Length: 480
Image (cartoon, rainbow, N blue to C red; front, side, top):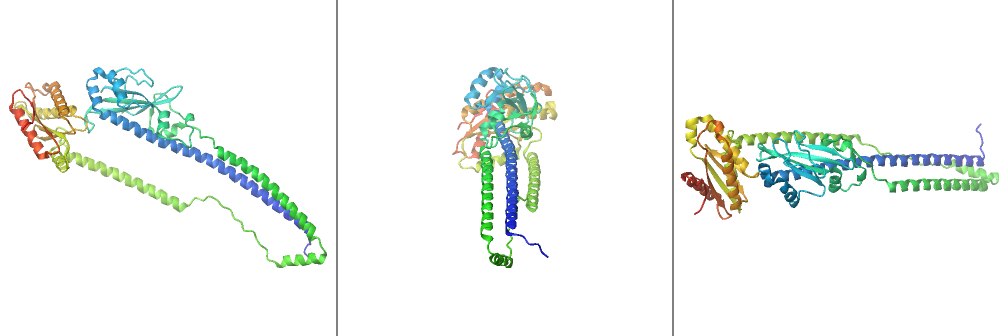
């Protein structure tokens, strides 16, 4: 026989069950919101780490670009060649050229042996001896800030074979980070590096050595306080509504027995309605994660294959366009560059230099081909040192060389020719067993947009032969 319950008992049980359910839901919501709060804090730290990593990449790119600009500056090459006025040049010309930015503490040059050209006593002073081999980043810590110093080689040729010296840039890493990026998830004033003084720094791993704090999430804290207050008010209102419902049930259900019976029968006959419920959760989709991982792996493999292909192409290009004896570009490279230049319209202003070694056949006959080969290599090395970084030197065959100088005025061409002669005069050819002097005949032809390349080449060749026929005038600029 089934047990009979009074309505009041059922109503009280219902109220208690609903109250318990609301309590459980309230606790669950409270815990979920706190979990979201903790997750957002972790995500903010992760975003801050990514922000710092990207900012470090931007700083590294900017520093390397400034170093490349400094290394390719012709005045830097001249200072390394003749540092007599280096201090005046460093303190005046570098600032005038815009390389000394507000975030840059120091800029300096070192000779090929790693000795600084002049002592540096300013903020972030550079060491007197090059501290890194090969060059890179070096940490300099102080009580107030963290500095990095970047050391880089400076070459005389575009292929980076002839080392002239080294350059250095010193900067405050925090100032650089603030300059390149506006931080949203990092408090810049809390930034510091867990590296020791004079330690070698890898920019790729510098983000993992950074210590920082995230800015306070005031909006989220206010939301948490408002949520707790709203949850308490909602609980009180729910309890009031349940109490009122209990009162109304008790008040209006306790009627004559028939009416109560009829009501109960109606309730028994009505189908029960189950409240639909469900829970939502953040779900990681395994299939999408696998797709992303596969795409990343595929992209990595494609990048590796592309790098290998580029390296192979570069090696093949070097073998096809380089003269093995002198290291200069060969006749094929000259013909390709000539065709490319001849196909441009308009051509623009450029200068052609033709070089020929006087009495080279006598050198080969008297001292042997080994000495002749050494002379060819020395001539190429001297000429490449005298040319600008962007200028190309070609060996056309035997003892004949050519150089293509784009965007060059007559004064600049005269200066480059003078430097070529000085390099040849300073070189000790006696080390190859020669007792006779090595003299170059130089023909110069300047071309304007109206002159074809073939005509410019003919003029330079004619000027070179005129210089070769002269006994004292070894440089001839073409004149009609």
